Length: 157
Image (cartoon, rainbow, N blue to C red; front, side, top):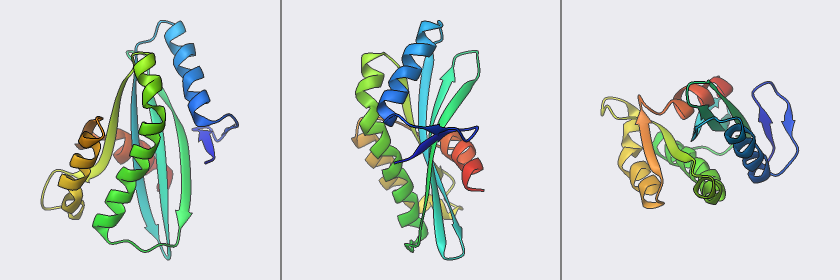
């Protein structure tokens, strides 16, 4: 998986090592960290582009993020696409969760799913919430799920 910074600079280390270094650097500077992981997607013609972000919030001092995006020609229903987004976020959260435990960093998984039943994405809310909470992660949906609905959304649009 190829990751990059928001400025486009590629990350050459394995993502787990890069995240560990970021945690050590930022906590060494006295910052209290919270990490939010989210994925968004956009259908563009025959392709669906997914963007997964790892957002680091420095309490009172802004934040930064690492980005992974890829395109596929797979065709999804809206519910399937929402659950693929959640699965991509969980995959990264699971890979990194021991770091967050070791360094006492709060972590949330954000789902780009609307809590309002009038929106199509709401079809996947119960399954997404069960999947994320069942894995032992904190869960946020819209409007609180900024990692997916704002940060990752900015990458795919």
